[in-house]
Image (tube, rainbow, N blue to C red; front, side):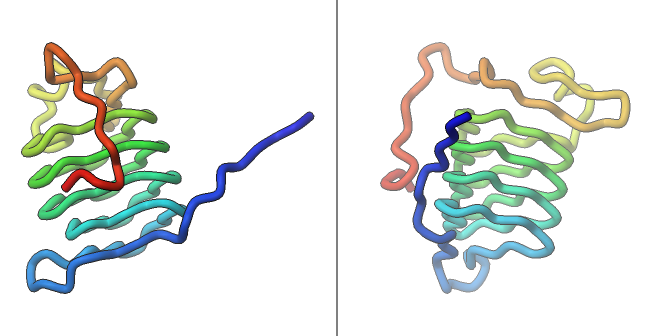
Length: 131
């Protein structure tokens, strides 16, 4: 059996401005992740995840290549790989609204699958140059 693990740079936490400091508390942050002015708590971030400015991620699992836009709030969610969460999105705070767009488990965990898109024409995002 052959396996391959991509080589990523270490995780990066940027912006030293008040209210915009990239932080991760009680979380696992994998290589290649960029916490660009966002806040991550009690979560697991797989390789190559980007959390943009003013975004809060709490008690969630984000799989590889997820890009979370600015001003998002995510709580008790599982986000599948290659998903782009648009700016200003709220997930995990209103169960009824979440049921209309995503899958919500009996225990209240919101699951966002790969086929998720709020856009009619999804946009490809370069995780390392978009702000």
